[in-house]
Image (cartoon, rainbow, N blue to C red; front, side, top):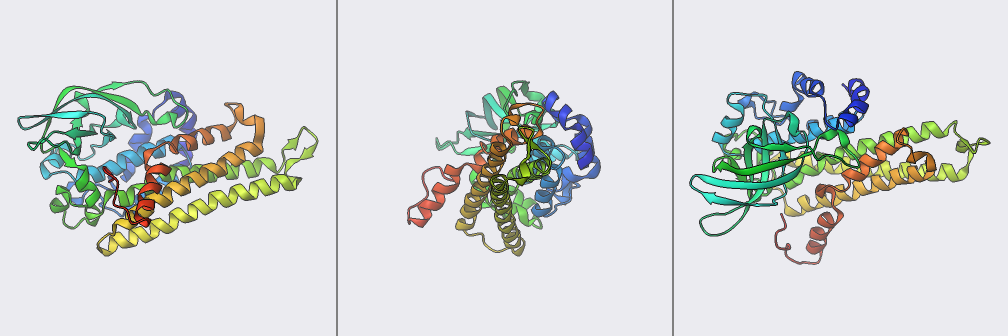
Length: 375
């Protein structure tokens, strides 16, 4: 699929969403069903396979890989929900997928049989191709508490707002979702705390699916961030190939300069070392999940810490390449600019936030309890 995605990448960025043709190929190949339980026709595959596919797709088109990562990973969230919710989604449409807006920006009001929710929820990648949306919200309960839940809402009950005019990942179609007093039945929800503890209702529905008992925070660092590692490798190869013959001010081959050679070597070290960190963490994590062993909290924190570190290390490598290429990068036609913008945009995502990745681990090393609200 990579050559086809690469050929479509300019049109994907121009349209600001992934094409129906690309989504149809995802369905035709079955890769959108990797994380879907077997009971509903899915592959119930290893998270490692899913993670590697994201990196491969990003060789052709970063936005297409990002949307695949979102829609594919959400099959895991759906599988964690109560059985009735899964029947709602896949009972009549086994190919159904969900986009999302997971940050709990609003409070859902308790009502008979569930909640009512209103608000604007941004960053819903792939929403134009989804049948459902997973919305994060603080939900009132009988005791007056407001724990965060992921609520499942049909796309037909949501207004999609075209506000995706952005720096990078332009082709992801990550528009905002507008909900106006939408009713969400109680069974179409899962507690965020249960997702992060691996104690969701879906774990009982699919007892043979070990992924559903893994803490969500353990594995999400190996989903979306994978796009950044591939982009960094693409940038490194692009610049190295260009500098072999490029002339500086029309006189000297840039590749003959030791300054250029050093800068390129350091960029390569940053980018490749970041990938080594990610691969080592992923391999150890998948072995731990497959073993069925109890997942220690420090392992979850270590994954978040190291992948945040690795993505920012990759970004530093790409920015070193931008500095090396110089003023040509300001031209929209320069391929490096697009790769750079996408990496910068990815580094703003909460899953690779240095603050959220480092502070919990630092507190643990200091013998301090988790900060309030830490998942």
